[in-house]
Amino acid sequence: PAMNQQRIYPEFPDFPVCTFYPMNKSRVPGANWYMEQFSNRYAMMAEHGMSGMKFAGRVVQVITASTGFDDWEWGVTLWGRAPEPIKEIVYTMRFDKASAKYAEFGPFYLSYIVPPEEAIAHLKL
Picture (spheres, rainbow, N blue to C red):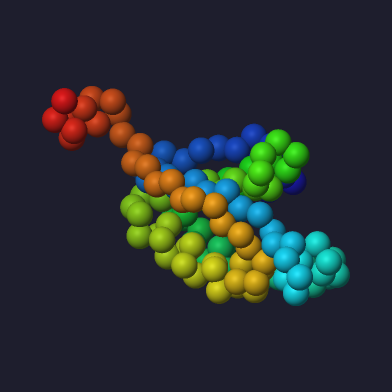
């Protein structure tokens, strides 16, 4: 129930680093996610989830579904206190079978969240 609540009403962390990237599950011959048995997909996603849990407290994620609204099926947003944990989780999880064999990634966008005054000062505007 708590996980479902977070999915419906996500709480965004007050972390200064944020990245977003879109994803699809592969449909190519020999690596078609949707042709796998549900039990196999479930096991792969369980492995993927366990990898992500190792970053609890350092990285917060929100997965958004966009099937039918966009060319991509999901959007992944990650927040961290620094860019290194985000890089580490993405690198680690790409070796999970669900990602290594079946994931298609779009472009990655990284941002720092700062007050406007700080951004203006940093950019020397």
